[in-house]
Structure formats: C-alpha cells, structure tokens
Length: 320
Image (cartoon, rainbow, N blue to C red):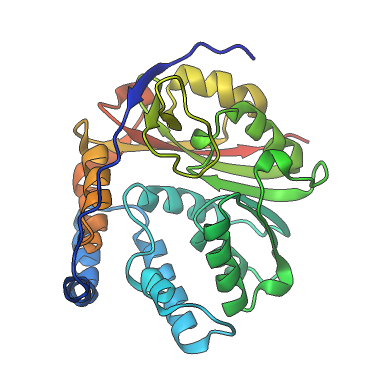
C-alpha cells in the first residue's frame, strides 16, 4: 500500500542527571507515603485507570507475600507504587474494562506492558496466553513474573516481532497490543498479521497515539534496537495517527471499530515536556501521575478536536 508520508518531527533524548543512592532512597520513601494521597486526589478529576491501579497494587502484594519463584524487590516495588504512568492510565482502563466482560480461552498479547496480560490470566484461570515481545530484557522480567505468579503452565513467551510469529489462522479469541503498533514501520502488515491470528467473533484491542495531523517522530537513539538510521542519522521512534491515517493504515484491514475513545492533553506540549522530565530527572515524582493525568488531560469526541497529542483506544470484533 502506497501511503502519503506524514510530516516529520525530530526529538532529542535528554541526558539523565546523576544522583546519589541516598536521594534515591529518600524519593522511594516519600513515594510510599504520597502515592495513596495522589491516588485519592486524582478522583477529583475522575482520572481513568484508578481501579486498575489498585489491581496492580494487589498484584504487587501477592508477589511480596506469596510469590512462587524469584522476582526482584525492585520489580515488586514498581507494581506496588509505579505500575503505570502518563496515558497508560487511560489505555489500561480502556482495555481492562472491556476484558473484564469477556471470558477468552486463547489470548495473544503483542508487546504490551506485562502487567495487563498477567492481570488477565490471574483473573481468568481458563485463559492460556501467548506473549510476543522482541525486547529481550523486558521479556526476561516478564518470564520471572510469570514464574513468580505460578502462571508458567499456561503462558508462553516468544522473543520475536509479530511478523515472525507462526501461530495458525484464527488461533486466538482475544488479542491486545497497547501502544506498540505506532513503533512499527510496517504497521499495516503487523495489523494484518494480528487480524489473521484472530478467530471469527474474536476481539482485537489497540491503543495508539493520535493527533489532529499525522506525524512521524524520530530521535537520536535506537530505542529498541530494531530500526536503522535515516539519512540524517536519526531513528524512527513512533507515529501519531490522524483520522485519515487510521483509515488507511489500520481500518483498511480491520474495518471500523465497534468501540473507541480518545484521551488527550488540554494544552499542546504537555506530554512531551512530561516525558523529557522523566528521562532527565532520576528523582521524578511518579506518585503525581494519576493526579496530573486528570488535571492536564481529558476526553475528546474526535481526533480533529485534539489541540496536541492524544491516545485513541480501539476495540474491533472480527466478523464471522
């Protein structure tokens, strides 16, 4: 498919400031105290994902007191206090609310943050999960988590791109992929692969960054080690979809979604400024994230209404 090239933007990854172990410890202790405070404050703005945030804490407690295999305390602490940030609050809420009403048997996740597939398999003991992820380091953490939760008997992990996966046609009744497709240069081919793997009547859940005008963003770091530099020495990072590019790159394969929601920043630049600070500041106060998301972001009816960056959640059902 020959698609029109969107505008390009070039980002620069800020250098991370050094800090002492003492200050990192102080930050951790302050975070333990303030995390529930900001979770409560976020209710004022009806921030999405607050219930799932509690589920993550319960998952961390389960690992802390009843783990069945090795998992580092740092990974447990992340589940207890830092399981998600930024637009993940919306993305997890969108997918989790729908999954909670389904009873899948064969489930495929394509490189989403590991907390979602773990939560799904724990909630529904009949689910067998296949997790595909080319990020070997992330997959190693996931493997430890699977063993520690006693899920290794009904969960397989594959270190590969979705294009290299060899599942049969119609193998799964639910497929999820949270903020992944936008990082894939050949995104339409990746969607086609997922759609082929989905059985008739099955559901596909995607979340994608979006904006009123499509844009491809490049940076000066090969974030996942999966792309080659362009003529300027920059690496493709991700794309923002507008209404037209969604039609051309996604809906051309899946058809129209059965359900969708859009969540975005109220003022342009909020999301990128927040991302820069997280990358540069080792003492970033992650406990403020749910409050910040409710205060600075809101729901929109159309992608064209977005003043800046947003995220769209999409649910598809494959016809019989």
